[in-house]
Every structure is written in C-alpha cells, then in structure tokens.
Length: 493
Image (cartoon, rainbow, N blue to C red; front, side):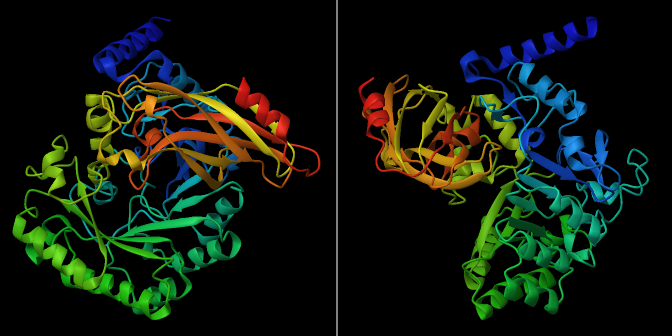
C-alpha cells in the first residue's frame, strides 16, 4: 500500500507539471503498443514495444507461447489497467520511467482486455553489419546488461506462425534493432506475407548494405513492401561514416539508386515508396551538406525524411523545440521530423504539438447506432476546440471531421467521407454540434465508427495527444431502402 501511495504521488506530481496540457475530461493517456500492437524480438521474446531494446520486461515467447494467451493474459491486462488508472503524463507506471510512446488518449473502446493486434513490430534478426555508436545492437554481445540470447534470429517458420496468429493485422514493421536483410529468409518471408495476407502493409528500414541485385529485383518486381526506408545519414563519406561505423556511403547510395531504378523498371513505383532517411547530427547538418543531400535525392527521385534525434551528437542547428528552425528543412509538418523521444518531450512541454494546436473534444450523443444493410443513418456529435489556437487561419480548409469504419477490434476497414468544421468551432474554446449523415455497410455485423479531427495531409489530432471518439454500429436484418425515420429523429432531436 505504501508503494502504491508513492507511485500515485509520482503520477500526481507529473500531472501537475504538465499543467494546462491535460484536463480530466480528456481521458487517460496510454501507450498504443500495449493495446493493439505487438513487438517480437529476434529471440522470440514478446516485449511491450521497441522502447525495451534490452528485453528487460518479457511477457511471453513465440517459441513456446500462443500470442492470444499472452496478449490477453493477466500481465498484459495489468499493464493496460495501470495505464488507464494513472494520471496523464509521459511516465509509465509499468516501466517505472518516461516512455516515448505514452502519447495517445484512450477512447471508450480501450479497456484492460485490449483490442486485436493491428500492428506487428517484428525483429527478424538482431545482428548488424554496422557498429552505430548509439544503437543497442552494437552492445548486445559486449555489454553484460543484455541477456546472452539477445543477439539472435527468428526462423522463417516461426515468423510465419506469428503472422498466422494475427487475423486482424493491418501493418508489419519488419525491423527493430538489427539489419533485417541479413536474415537469409527475409525475401521469402515478405513474399509469403504478400501471398497469405495481401491486405497487410509492410514497412522496412534498412541501411542498404546487405542488398544484392537479386534481392532488390525481387522486392521491386513483386512490390514486396509498401515502404522501403534507407538510413543514410550524410552526403559525404566522412560525415556518413562517423555514425554509420563500418559502412560506405557510395555503396549505400548505390543500393538506394538501385531500388529506385528497379521499381521504375518493373512499374511498381506507385505501390512501393523508397525513402532516404537522414538523421541530423552536429557533423552532417551544414547548409552545404543538406543542399548536397537534396541535390542527390532530386537526381534519384526520392523523398528525404529528415530526423531530429535525441541521441548524443544531435544537431544543434535544428533543435526540436524551434519550429522556425525546423521549417528551414522545408517539411510541411515539423512534428514529423522528430524522433519518438522528441515528440514525447514536445507533447508534454507544450501540451500538444506546436502550442496546443491539436486539441479537441468529441462526444457522440449516442453510444450505439443500429441500421439495416446499406441504410442511411445519422448521428449527432458535440465537438469542442480545446486548443490555444484559432482554427480559421490559412490552413482552415485542411481541417475536417474525419471518419473511419472499423471492426469492433479497431481494424480500419475504410475511410468514410469527411465533414467540414462548423464556423462556431474555429475560435479557441469554440463548440458546435454537427450531424454525421452516412450509410451502413452492406454486410450485417458489428462495426465501430471512429471520429477525430484531421488536418488533411498533416495529422490526425489523436496522433498529437487529443482524444478521439467512437460509436458502435450494429447492422442487422435485410437490405432495405432509405431508413428515413432514424435520420429524421436524429436531425430533429
């Protein structure tokens, strides 16, 4: 009991430090990783997220445990219960420290039982062909604080079994710590994902140095991934090699160019995005080198993703808390330049990204709507502007009420038409009630309507710490024409 009181006082203190950043009506702050995501390390351990690279808190192992039993088991339920009960802050009551991933507002659908796993972070191998000084992989075998089996590799059969156990899966991050294409069966696994689960998106991050022409051809010809990110931190050999120890810039750029050319040759550029990721350090952030990187990216026809890091040697010219400086990088949304740790600090220092801009309150007037297949229905929502900003600036046209149709477990089925925001909602503390007028799916069953404000092309508000809203939708019976009475009742209530 005394320990619980100490923990509670810690949560209260951190909540007070946040000040205006939180309100009780905003709801609990949680880490999505323990509600509808799964992280599997190369030794098979199931950990809460990529924020535990050492595997210090292991909840199961895919070599011996079934995922459903682990994800729905008492320890995972305890993690969720602790986060839902803790005061909103960046401090995780499970990890007993700040967590860069505890930046999401819980919705009414988030409970201790969690949801189905929608995102899988799968670490195929935890070995690398580089020795980047700030990467945990560089220390797995030399540092006694890591377990002896931390450097490992998942067998292909085990990875496919993990895939088969996750029927609601939407996305795979086929990387974590280590170079994924050192795995001898990486291409075959990606090929099996496309065959078995063609609707699942796959993102991969690589240093590009393990590619062979055959691997690049297979990835491009079959569009085996949706996004292929090359981590190349420099436009000059000496600056690149300072962090990517053991690597060669020329070889990395050759692989990047080869991937782009192969996608063009096979006509898959519209399905497979190749990205150049460039972490900004104090030794590679000069105007001249940034200009050189931009020139090379333009020649190759790839997008550069600049990253503001939190690690040692981070750029001082582009501090995370200076939007004006970050705007020089010509990013449409400076938030996307930040590493997860920087995003956490920004969120809790200012209450939300860039001066409390992304803060809204949404509340459906009904918890459940029923309709026949294909029938028209309506739902009233109360929306409030809880930010410190007016939403009527030049970007006002991008602000909409976004709607998604999801399964009861939270898997997105499709985006539904968005709605413009009422004028009364635009000033700070503005409020309005709006009517969502939609059509039920053709297939009977249980669904979920997900509502949130979105700045189109930039971000959903819930990605910046605001709370979204959900409403259950039950579709029953046979298809009929327009369901006029429910619409009229909702519109006139």
